Image (tube, rainbow, N blue to C red; front, top):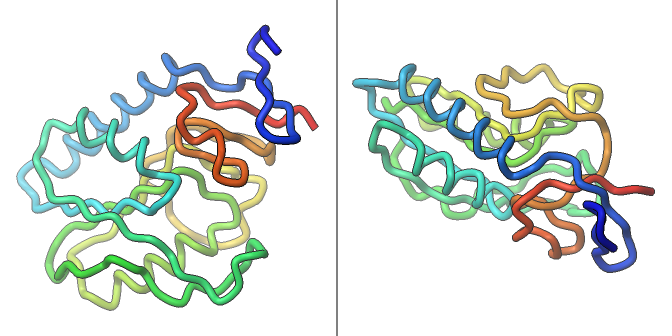
Length: 180
């Protein structure tokens, strides 16, 4: 399609956030996190599938070494945004007394991240912080504190840099917006 436009399956997308801006923001967030957790035992929990690219770039840019675990959500019904989370698959680590950083690719309603936070709180960590590459403030329905935000975006449908459309588009280096 050219001119910063791409086609994924039946949808057209236009360039929204270039890789250079993403890289710069990830380094900025890593600097903040490194400073805030210097000398503390930080444990990172990355939410699959979407956050894996953001998480990989973030941990490479951190100036502190910390363990990381990847978890995937299992839900009661995966078709609507307000689904109930059944369990976090892969959370086998003991988080008691640790500072936990949850890394997510995008937060819209806040329901999922709030439920993840509640499950992690049950393990009595010292603290829980949340980092997200993208936040949709207009879609936020739940009062959840997000400590590290890459970009605030509108309610557009986005793909690239880990975000997908029906499992396609995750590997794009830039983020694209649906042209509708």
